[in-house]
Length: 180
Image (cartoon, rainbow, N blue to C red; front, side):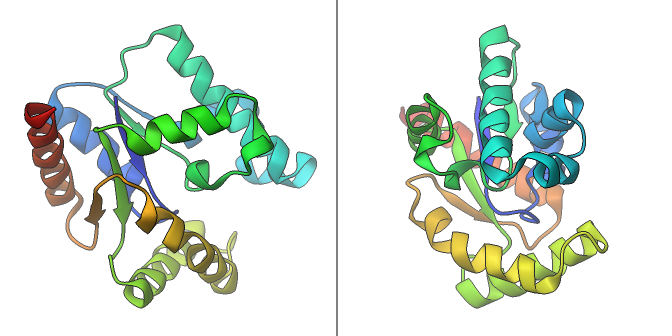
């Protein structure tokens, strides 16, 4: 399975189906699956808090994996790789497996810090239309950028057309499969 990870606004949900089509496989958006199982993420967070959300999100991922569905490309939630270690008994092993898988790719709007912050904030504020302030979006990417950058997976900048990003990832993944 190809895992697309990165901050909100990086393009994971947009690129996943394009990449899946390019690879001739299926895709899943973990946020969409969470919403189908638990309802609106914002409402869940307001009612139960971030820790409960993160635990439930890990459980949704594990349920998908356990069902044996053939999922070729998975767009993971923006915070998936940054949850607290105690969020779920299987989380640390899962996070480490995703981080080191040869088919995991980190998507970032830009690979340079300030450019990434500016573009992430622009995308998040536009996408969330009033649900997320610019200050909150900026704080999140400033806190998470280094975590994403230090993951062992290859990084792909997404400040280009989504189809071009999908082709770049497919080329990268197919090259790694040949080397593995």
